[in-house]
Amino acid sequence: MAFVARSLAGAASRLGEVAVIAPGWPAQLTADGLFDVRGVPTGSDLGHAARLSPESVVIVDELVPGIATGLSSEEFRAGFYLTASDDSVAPPWRHLSPVSDPDRSPLGLYVPVNPLAAKYRHHGFGFTGYVLVLSNPEEGADPPAAADWIGAALPDTDVVVVADGMASAWKDRSLRGRVGIDTRTDLWRLMAHATVCIDLAPGRLIGLECIEALRYGTPVIVSGASGPAAVHAHASSGHTFDDEAELVVATLEMQVPERRAEASASGKAYADEYYGDPDRFVATLAARLSE
Image (cartoon, rainbow, N blue to C red; front, side):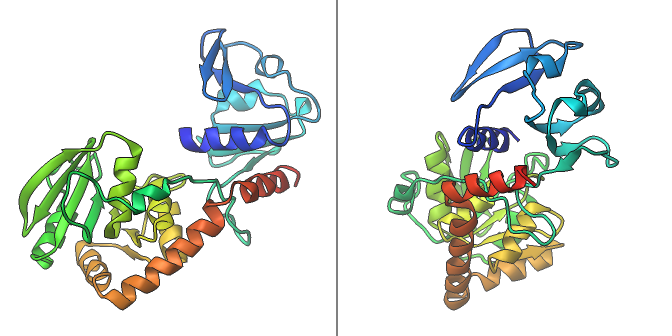
């Protein structure tokens, strides 16, 4: 959510004046990169704090009842939300999807990656061509069950599991070593030099790590119920799975050089087109907000 909110605010600043408001915060300004976040105590007039005008556009990260009732529709031209606590959201509020809307191309947030990560592998491992598994922190298993299944099916293949800021190397279901993931570039290096990236917890809003992997030409495999991440997988010739058996079959397919090369090229083209162009993102956002 933080990445999406910051991206939207940054793109919107190319279109006009932007105020970033944090309801429920103390009445003070807090520096947050490009913007000073304006805190608005609970019970305060949100519209007045945001200095809304009839030409204003409001974007809310999570539309809860307190926000909806605290802003009068007469104070602004259009209202958008990313998520809502109630499915029955009334006008003037409209859903703004970071990934897909029916009959429309993705909004296409700009997802930057460091191109040097594709040139230099992670210094903690002396090998590449592994299966990268981004773990689900809620599972707590070491390794997660998905990685255990893959290790059993591909005993000669290295499996690298990322969890809690650590990367663990497994082979034939045995732990070979661990190294720390200290920076985002460390994670990008692991993504860039993997055969395939399996994201077990891609998030319900954008599937950020899936996009990053695709921008390096690394195919992705995610759960079929993972929302935006499943959209990325289908659009990029990747795979989705519903159980461990399907996960193993998908992983085995990505070990075939021809199939992996096809998915790599398709995935990179998709990610670069929709998530690698900041000017496209600004233009698309401008079009959505003016509808």
